[in-house]
Amino acid sequence: MNALPNPSFELPRAGLCATCGHAEVLRSKRSAFLRCARADQDARFPRYPGLPVLSCVGYETAAAGEPQGSFPAG
Image 1 (tube, rainbow, N blue to C red):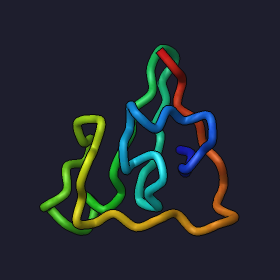
Image 2: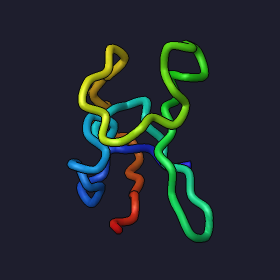
Image 3: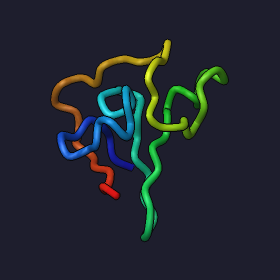
């Protein structure tokens, strides 16, 4: 798992998740999925939200200095 945000992450595709501190990228050989870690504690949040997320009551900006993740374009 990698943490977001990442400058190479396509903001229009992910919406708020691209800069949210609760977003995680899960990868397999052929694909990548954006996962909401808030879903672990709060059932109001979908584990794998439909993208782009345009509004979210749980959105929190990622703290500076967090590890960078990436999400492949395409």
